[in-house]
Image (cartoon, rainbow, N blue to C red; front, side):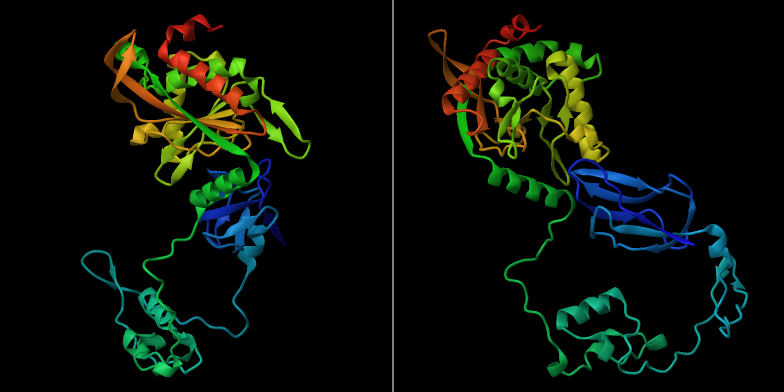
Length: 406
């Protein structure tokens, strides 16, 4: 008896996945809960376990293929049933001759004499290189007579195909085509959905963060002694979280179906992380309950998981606000795209030394560019400007962060 295993629902809102690689092959015996396949969905890589023990009779999908939830992944056969399979009546396998024994290991017997060329109409054997050559020249391998061993098609055999029978595809103009797959496809889908469903506006400011710069330098050793590296990001996170207390309309989402603005009572911040495969946004939960050092540890740990692709789906969901620090890569101002369904995202640019009026005198100070993109449906420009001004106050005078802390 055979049993089909279908792709299960991996979480809310997931309708399809990309099959990255099979962890088993047809004919393999698998145990219950043994990982069967690695899939990518919602920016996370997940292993799908086997629901039962048995033998893999058939794999229904190819690596790189997009698979819908509910589609059949694997057909299992009972182990006893697979063991009972016999050769078809009348079929005989050639007797295996023992291999010749060499000085190290075994040596194969000499090749049998090449069999006659395969007749036209048979798609004979061909190396990947030959198949690629055939595709580029528009040659149907079924029409090629192979002259290699066992009818294998050689490169010279392609030269015998008349030009009239070749239907070469025109070369792509100026470059190659790279399919949008995996994380890059997810990013493309999400940012496009965000742009289509939000009325986005970006406001920009600059702020003097010299005091934070000096504080970070003084406390770096203390933080490192606790197993974390102190960047500026934890200070930025705290400043935004404190400002959101007075501007709750930016800490939420919009329920389009119900036409309601959902104000979040928690502060779960999505943090944009650059990875070799593209942008990921892990979520730091309960930012208001974490110290600067705890935020530094959380940023470090989630960043590591994101880059190693070991992060869970749960750690990528549930943000109420998003922060992106593109200044780490040299950017100044930007128009960051809202991480839907959030209604706002704050971007931090590159810190530079600039002449600045400080206490009535011109001095060289550390200046940080800020960019706030918000959904105009959730609030108006005046409220967003006041929120941005509040963030500036906390960054200019970090002592306020501790005075306002619960």
